[in-house]
Length: 329
Ligand code: ATP
Ligand code: ZN
Ligand code: MG
Image 1 (cartoon, rainbow, N blue to C red):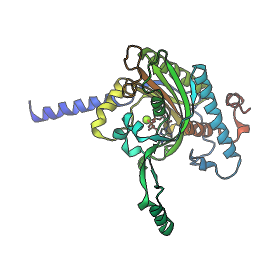
Image 2 (image 1 turned 90 degrees about the vertical axis):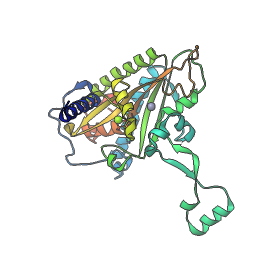
Image 3 (image 1 turned 135 degrees about the vertical axis):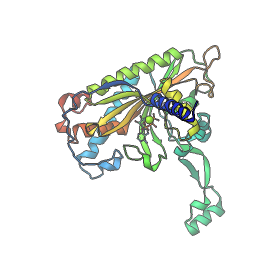
Image 4 (image 1 turned 90 degrees about the horizontal axis):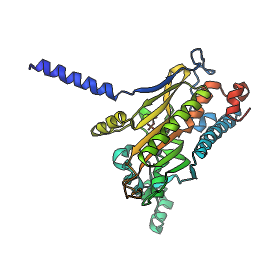
């Protein structure tokens, strides 16, 4: 074969890989968004809570929506017999490492440093105010997700029945500067529903959540799609993992369209990670085989932002049935 033929074959192969890697939309709907006009053209506010710091009604209303959307999600979790949890914001580095996070996403981690209780060091700081050269790394990081805590809680256990845990937590990610914006924050609220059980249980429970949240999304009048996704790996040698996640349908994302589709971002992800974490944490069935697990993760700030963008910041002007769903009519 000529060199040109080889090059063409190589390019065709690459194109095929890229095509399979591109997200496949598994659900798609346009409800009533065609004629939708933003109530605040040009306004660029941020789901960071400082966005509502002007003391007007907006701040109260945003907090109310935050509680309301989380209330709806946690009630759904209760229907599924989830156990409620509250986890710390700090997580041992050892736990993150066991989850593979330290070697896969080191750039995302906010580490917690501390100042030793030592009089010479404290005196130095007192004299100079220089904190940076007198600190040391603690054994903790700020938690980048909620679900990692659940694996630590269940580590070493044999489970005879499936377990569902749910918690709302603050998550911290040192996102790349170019990724900030598009509703990507360094500190945000996530509700997770964590599923642990047999392969069938995890997959069918995840599908229940896909259906249920898709319906909620439509009922709230939001527009978008659910598509296959992968985690945003940094290292090029992790590309195979990304491809595997896509091909094996391990991660779905619910992507919302705001401002008539000019802005899109994921407001929830539905993950089935199989044995990946039950194995290192030794969470097993009666035959000592690692169980499967998954999580449904909701970015609460992004839900609030999407609803405010869609319906505006004056609760009196919201459509009554939406207000009723959000329980403020
Ligand atoms: P994205 O798709 O936006 O890159 P991700 O794939 O890293 O996020 P997950 O790890 O699946 O997201 O997190 C679950 C949910 O948490 C996301 O669907 C999103 O709603 C929310 N989320 C994730 N990262 C952020 C962030 N930096 N700021 C605000 N919300 C976030
Ligand atoms: Zn998770
Ligand atoms: Mg994503």
